[in-house]
Amino acid sequence: MKTCLVVDDSSIVRKIARRILEEMSFNVVEAEDGVDALVVCKRAMPEAILLDWNMPVIDGFQFLGHLRRMPGGDTPKVVFCTTETSVDHISRAIDGGANEYIMKPFDKSIVAAKFAEVGLIELMEPTA
Amino acid sequence: MTPPDYEYLRKLLKDHSGLDLSADKQYLIESRLLPLSRKCGLPGISELVQKMKGGSSPLIAQVVEAMTTNETFFFRDKVPFDHFRDSIMPEIMKARASRKSIRIWCAAGSTGQEPYSLAMSLKEMGATLAGWRVEIIATDLSQEVLEKSKAGIYSQFEVQRGLPIQLLVKNFKQIGELWQISPEIRAMVQHRQLNLLHDFSQLGVFDVIFCRNVLIYFDQDTKINIFGRLAKTMEPDGFLVLGAAETVVGLTDVFKPFPDKRGLYRPTGARATIAPAVTATPKIAAMAGR
Image (cartoon, rainbow over all chains, first blue to last red; front, side):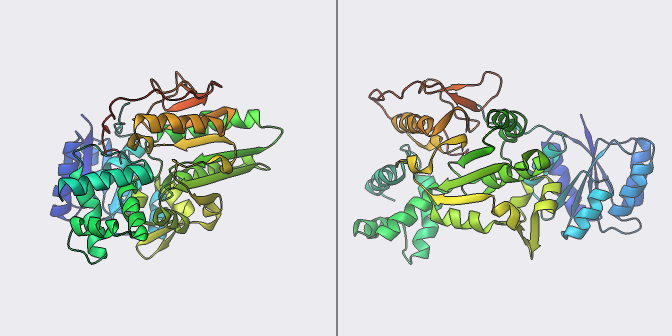
């Protein structure tokens, strides 16, 4: 089973994300800011990270920089999930090493589409 | 909605659009037509039917539009677009090397996600297409849908299903909470209103036809008829792309599937034969694909 780390300072968002990801058969680990998330990654690198941008202490963008310099930190697929929707933010995220980008609000169909895009899951096709 | 109202709408939709509803699709009619009734200031579907019987043809057009509007997203099902980039385009470019022109038809272009996905794929091919003329013609039954396609403006929700983030950043401009596809990509697609039940030979001959997730709404005779006419409007070495839940197998011999490429078909050169009489209208498998 693949593990997805959900990093968000809102417990409600973490709860919604957990429900969606568990339905997609992920093992879910939570962190409420970037520092917390780095501790989780040092212990065991997850396959996927759903990452908020604006958080106290270390924000999502700073976390991404630290992660990509860690040993094994280039392996997780990082998908931003944030209310920051400007092209400027999106470009910075991609240049900083993010694999995909979700603009909040989000739902299961968006998470599934984005996770499929980066190869974390396969979307079922209807058959003839 | 009374049973006679339902029968009236069924027949009307069949005659005007070929849409073939089975006997148990009341919920679908209600979900699509109640909002339209309210828009017209009518309390319900029975009143809407009364007004149509009174001979309101703009209303009939609106009803047909509301019932046939397709839900769609960018790079829907992904595989056909991989085939387009990796198999169809290389093969067609080899075959058209002297003429350097390719014609593509999206026969159910809907709100533009499919033709624009193809246009973005072509743009990604970059220099290999320098000097080529590639036409994409998007047709749809619904004028309202075509207007949306032409504008190329999508909600944040719509641009997040199927569209890789890099392509969003590259090809769209943010307008408040909406996203508009670039003039460069929009200029690659021509739009025409077209009912697949009517003659479409005036569109000319195509190298590639995408006709996805529309034939599932037609009955068997209509499908066979459309396949016959599609074959006539294609180059002998052209490609037909159908939806994931659609096939020609068991319906017609004017197209044959590529054994190793799901959803892709090629004209066989066989002449379309007159369809045998069908004793019972097959039920539409699922509106869920819509």
